[in-house]
Length: 402
Image 1 (tube, rainbow, N blue to C red):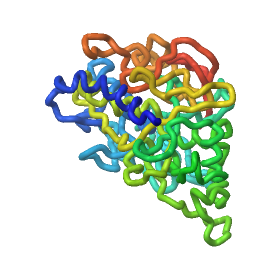
Image 2: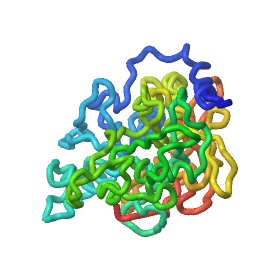
Image 3: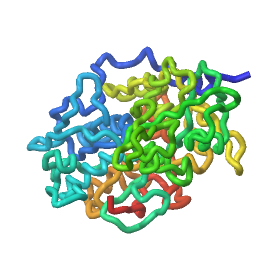
Image 4: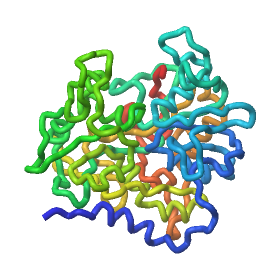
């Protein structure tokens, strides 16, 4: 018999314990007020946007970090303004756009077709945003699975995340999958699992989670292959014209928005375990760090347990927190990306660099106990270096040029 709600119940418990003490101040996601221009402006990843908002309230006196959501929050707009002078531009949605905005802020020309305009975001169609972004939130490393210690941008780990498949909690698809089963579904080899129809959904392009999901170590598919119609269960080539991208069978979805499964019992999506935990902790977060709000977008999702050829079936959430022992291919660090040249800046150092940095060490009180802000927002904490791609919080030797 399937146990359908163990992960959700465990996560919800923390929020329930503090729900009655939530402050009455208005809930916000972007910096509040929007005209409060703090010292470090960050944009990018949906996965870590809630953590960014929490750090914005927790660090310093709430005047250090301004973190802008990937999507407009309630009452927000698609345009953001990050500095008091100029700096009004399209809100970057996802890790890829966040990193592009950081590069444009450094004066890069993003228009690969060239010649473009230095500092223009979005490339070719946007405005000059030089000096407007100080860091990018990213849920993936720009260099893929090959780490480098050289590059114009440094990827500083903030926490440990993992990504698993999410199914409908009331559907007939199993709550435990093998890595091979998931990969075969996303390669369109299998359209049924355990005798039940399964429909794989794609996340929006530019998503760090989608970029991570499709890499060779996991699904081993590419956007070029998708656009060529190589995976017809996800996108269909209607005209046999390589210059015309294949049309998605179902619209791509915003990452970590489980409401897409509402009414779709056979559909599956990749989902950040850290985001799932954070959304379940929303009441605790809102009590500990008013006026931060975390939207509970889990909908009817159930993150599945996973097994690999070297690891037995492992639950994604244990005791209400992310299981840092989830299978290695699906674990990842999440990052704050800064220009490498700025690592010597005292403000950047104290905020991001090393296990003693504010991002890595800051705590808040929850139910009378101190908890790291990073962990409250669903991510694991790693204090020692395993490898450049499984590094300690605040590590500064993982770099890339984009």
